[in-house]
Length: 88
Image 1 (cartoon, rainbow, N blue to C red):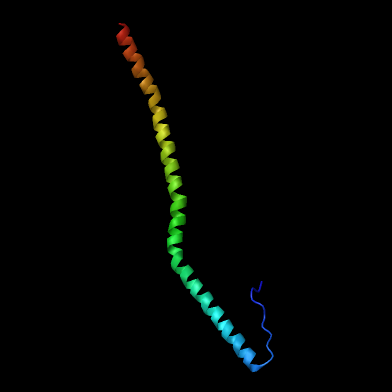
Image 2 (tube, rainbow, N blue to C red):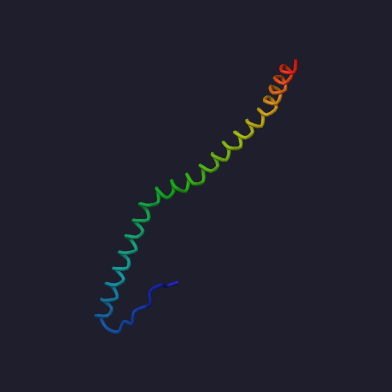
């Protein structure tokens, strides 16, 4: 779980060096977290739009196809009326 190996501390100087290295790593991690927090709203928007838009498009496509299918009998009956008029 620990990504960073424990330093070999044998003197006061090596302890101070380990403390400085730890502070630097913490600062880097804090900056990474701040950057990630600033990116989060745009990523949430992208995720939401990526999930919502296909659902809306699918629903629109299904309803559009259904409306076209409802028109098929009407168009067929109109064509049959025109045929009858031409035959007469």
